[in-house]
Image (cartoon, rainbow, N blue to C red; front, side, top):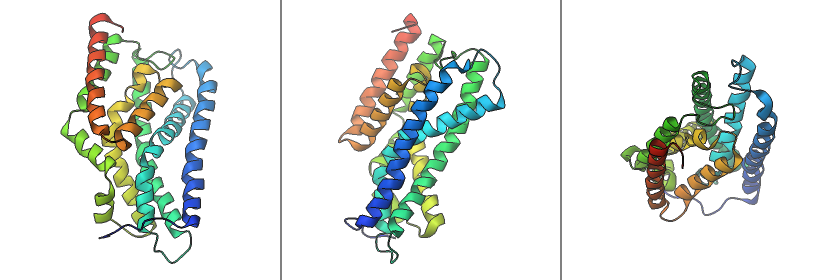
Length: 254
């Protein structure tokens, strides 16, 4: 068990983390923006998906999840890196933090597989438009109401508490080595997945390739995890999701 966390990282470790994690986030957003521009004319939903279509969509989900979710895990990456700050080899803490981030990303890669399959299924039954937006007001309503209700569940609360205060979990489950870092990153990723998976469904309402919608969901997840009283704001947002979903269900639009 790790009883304390060093106050700061060395300049070398900070540099390793900044270049690796920060650069990965920037690259993911740049790649995703480029992909959305190229994917617009693909006519997905108008013709049956090919394996190439599935691969491209899976790639889009992966880079989108990295760009959206890795920024919300930076605090946990830093905490874990500080737990390795006493390593004798220069740069070991920064590298350990990168492996921790890799374990976290693996979880969201798995989620991307499920999201791609779900998108394929929805398009196959004509519930998703070629622009990757729910074509059924009832589907949009169910997604919104489901996401709103999820904000009040005990599992959501437990996962959000972990994401807001990961220190105790990381200290009591600390594991050395490359595999230990990946395993802890994946464990943190599963908590994050439990916290946010329903919110990702909102992308099917606002548009999977809608940059404004993606940015809004990203900002909300960041605020919920990092801001003071973010959990309270999350519940308030849950109420708003339910009310908007009811409007969709009753009127068919907002």
